[in-house]
Length: 445
Image (cartoon, rainbow, N blue to C red):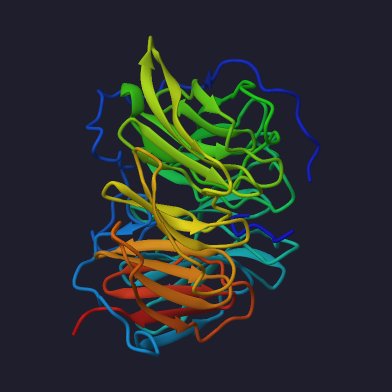
């Protein structure tokens, strides 16, 4: 079995019971959103930053323009390499003049800041004990001068973005009784939404929790009831995203038992869907837009589009379509919605480029793999950035009209599976490989 990128514990009993508010939340339920627009978390950074997992709005999309529409034969220029990141599969968050990532160094899991001018490590902040296999997976989240990161062992820290000094910490297991669905450790990147920090311990009584982002104080915890037999109890390897489907602001994720939505106001369970779950590792972060949620998983699970509709003071999830694993399954590279079309890599332990019409599930095109293994995907300025496990970067025009490859190069450093996802900020492409961070110039001259 190939190890998940985002990435055994004792199985829990079926989860029952309502969400459990601990303090009075301050965020009201919002009005229905425009179905043509995705909901956005409230993170405060510059427009050209990549401040968290999957970029500014957690949708794998950079607002950058003026980027190269075609690469030279040897790829875009490599500007510099920084070392000292330790062992890990985490991607990089880029904010201002710093890159933030995680790695195992000297027996400790650490948050690491790299100065983008000197290309040197600015500081490291210890999180807890190192992980037993391949290092840390979480891409830190940066918001208003604070950095949030979760180790594979489940230690959650908030540190100062300038100095790396610790502000507060929690433990997924000790504080919430959390567990993962399988053996690969916590991979989630915490979500900042207003004054709340959202994460997924995976516990019976606290599947998802909301914390005060400044103090770590528990605001609410959400118990997710049993809604199907597929998958396994515990947290999955995805990260939470914000949706306003059905007129209720909510947090959507792919956990061990499948896709779920819980209310942002108080954590109450709204809906669950288990058809895309498998019992090994549910990994890709869902895509949300308006009233729709698209989710997929590997290991033969497939993919589905759901429509969220109001149901009293709750939400009902209705299946719009289901794609079997032969049509589309995404192992751990993810997928991106551009206009009315989804793009991603198809196949378990694979990443065959595919374009799917979002609202119908129609496959517009699919081609054989230009490189080996899974493909981690990002989007900017009309193009898709596919990073392949084998160590190749591929540039593809984002169009439903057909597959148009616009460049390909071999990443100069490859010491492990080339799984960390691309980060795009200020005309630069950032790729992590274990101890090394590489920066490429992708701006048009």
